[in-house]
Amino acid sequence: MVPTSGRATYYVSYKREAFIQIKLPKYSLPKDLHIVSTDGKQVFAAVQEWNQNDTYNLYLSDTRGIYFTLAMENVKTTRGVTGNQMLDLYE
Image 1: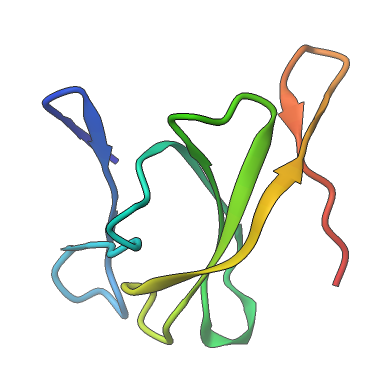
Image 2 (image 1 turned 120 degrees about the vertical axis):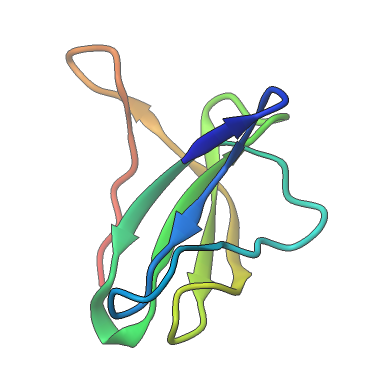
């Protein structure tokens, strides 16, 4: 992640190649991003948009981890013991 003009920009490196900025859909305005899984030759990411407080949108990438598409919207989170937001997912 590299902050630019108040917005975070996220980068990925596929098989140790040069870093490339990830491509979320143009309507996405992420304020927080967590990698959930890198299994199955894809990246599964939880993204909290600027308009979300206790929900995340889940995105699935192409095989290089660059282009992401929305997989599930408004997944509810819970507060952990330390106050952190937690997202429970099961395969």
